[in-house]
Length: 272
Length: 272
DNA sequence: CAAATAGTGTCTCTAAGACAATATCAC
DNA sequence: GTGATATTGTCTTAGAGACACTATTTG
Image 1: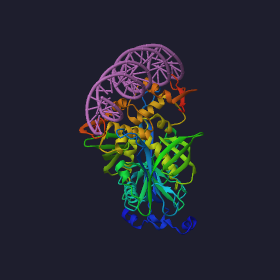
Image 2: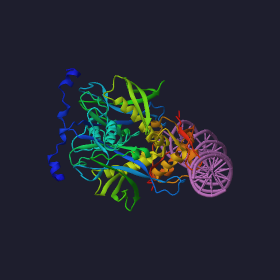
Image 3: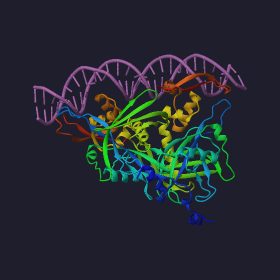
Image 4: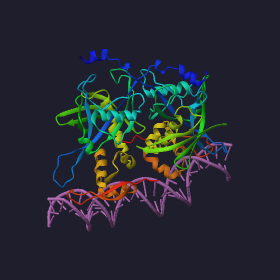
């Protein structure tokens, strides 16, 4: 028998197969209340969720995402689903792992590939809830409690989602959680979100990865604010500049009209 | 309709689904020819491959791995397949990503989850080729050529596998390749192997990740040799010791019988 | 000119790299 | 004792963090 003959008679669909989805953890930046017309606004990390219109988990909040279709790669699926469900056309998609626990979806055997995307202000405004689904940005807050427990709080106006997670282990640079209490998030999405926050934080300490998430041109202060918001720290501008300098190069463009000294726009420097 | 009613009538198997596999890139360390009875042996990075007994890709070399079964997680599948096909019971398995290009498997729509495992000398010796499959350790050599091309050479005795890959992009800390020339490796395994080498190299620069791959007790020189072999560099022992010191703690055990001064065994220090 | 951010200079401290020197075992 | 690795110490240099200071725009 030749390989061609083998393939002609082989039917892969005779065997057990799971359904496969892509789910996207979309992070953005929300402005806090403004202080003065000339002061830059402080930002907090926010997360995009969709209110499920149908079963299962009807009326619960979930990550945008959906089933992978024949012929497309999981990244393409993530791209398509995000566009369909929220109108956002992502410029970046980082694969953060596969969730394959057998009972994670009540509909049956479903394996999910998780992605993280970072979107900017403009895309944020463009979030369109279509007739079927309601999409909202939630403010993300994390707090560590006793005994390896973490409280994840998502807030959007009057809507408050609280989830308690338990630290399981840290391995190969990934932090793993189990859900302890969760009433408003669908599937295992609370776990995916929690783990995504840790992965994102770990990754954006590396400037090269941070740049992969961002537009081509940026100010050094803008860059600093994004890293600060994600990491939840405050850095000194002078030191930050010195540290990024080897990775960026100047352009001859400047910002303007901000009520204070304009900033030079920089772009990423191709190292090596 | 309630959620229970919905689930009773819902049949997920009516929709298109892929088959899903786990494939494992198993790295080990091969001793180079010995110089003197008292000199430590130099090691080179090696890779475990299996000669396929049936179609497709009959008689080609492939990564150990196989189809995910209902009820198991992809990590469990990797564990099971590795044990079944090579006799190795892995102590570590790092998820390195999902390969979902539609035409990557001639049998049909197959998505693969790739893992990296590092095994020590003892497991190396235990590799048992069963009657159906031949398992062999290949010496791994990488060389960079012009125009972003890389030559991957796998050698085991007289068997030589040569593959040419083209650098596509580096994004989110991952280096992506396409296969340019490949005649002896099955599926897209040449690509998975090439990308796995880069991921492993990047990851083991971090001591915490390196420890996740290793047994509980080790000598500092042993640790250094492993990092050196993977990264393909030579480090000064004095500096290496100072650098790892914050991550390890002494035990009161020593090595012996090596023909030279014994080394203290260390273990990982739980930081925070 | 006042308020805000943009950007520079300098000091200190720590960590990384190079290299020299000493310690200890098995044969 | 010899030949190998194990381990310690010291010098130099590069980089991170703290902080003071200057520059520039818009209302």
